[in-house]
Image (cartoon, rainbow, N blue to C red):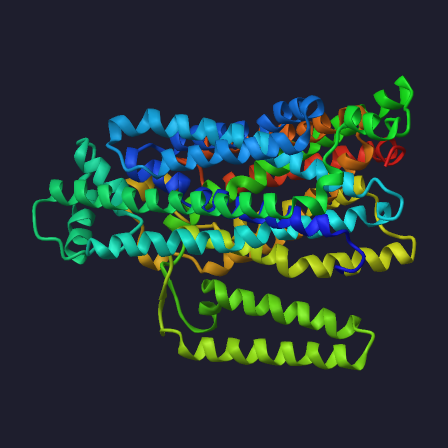
Length: 553
């Protein structure tokens, strides 16, 4: 799986891992922070969340255009500095009034920094594979690169959870998902009698002695402070990312060139394309971009409505074997066992097979010991569910590479556009699972005003199963789409076209807010059904233009 790849791939992937760890730590708690600190409604939160994600993924277009003229490496380092300043501003505890302008300024800096960093780093990865000796490994390389991104994302929800629990525990509080909303309703005078009764019970459970107004203010302050500390984790991860990038730069320095710089070094700009060929390639890319808009609209519900679902409708603790998945180190052991299994079958020497077998047995033994020492009941916070998608990505990447490699040897591997279409169909199946799990549940409006009976809370497995299926869709779509862009984009417009991929992602991310707007009086199964229909229509569209796309692939 890792054989024959240039060293520069691993250096760039590790630099991205550090940055993504910080970003996803922030994203795991972002919507929770907005509602806890400022009392934003679901609609307001959805607007801010969608707008921020849209800007994050729109700015790579600007970053790509700048890099096509100034160079990719310069933009990457500038981007890291911008993001660092943004995370520092988010980490500063503030009052509600002064916190809003500071927060929006921080989000703008993070978006600008991401725009300079993300797409240009991936262009350099693509440049590593422009040479004939590596060109056939491009798709596999982007799958490995994508896996590295998710290694960072895997640990992010746990980091956010640990920090939240530590800060609240230090203030003699514990997390309860219902308190922030009810506390804001009490303070602004909109709470119902049922809500007041629920809040009184929650205050008693927190062992807080004092009036309700003081409890509400103190709890909101401490929970907001916990989220501020979570944002500070991102600052540390960016320092690590910058260090990796600078130290390992000799490994990929030869890939840091745009078309003008390549001409200065080698005297040519690579293969010349006619105006017709250039136009044909750009049109093909734009058609793919149009499809992936709806995938990202659906997929990035993980930080919005799927987090709301985890907070409001999913059980607050797990027992039995379900506990395994809520300790990130258990998930790491599972990943090690999976990779050991692939190594066992792929090793060409007896020694290699023995080492792989030992690794598998050791990881499973440690996993069994870890399970036996876990507390009988594990309390869970809503953001922890976001670790399952990156876990599945990392664990399933060797599976996808093996399957696609086998099909490639048989000359039956689907083209990148066809994989994207299949991914859209799989995404629809993922939201079908969540729709089935939502039948009979009260509407979000009902839960917000009156709470929910604990007997109505659903199993964690509904969300986990949805994340599993969406991960299959992601593996078909995202790394293959990035690889397709790096391969098909006209040489003079590589940065711009990679930026275009992120603009499509930006539009999709902005449209996540649409589903947030439905989060109120509509039945939940209908909310998820909107996403099912959009994914199916997108798949139908891309299959209808498949011949045009495969002509340039």
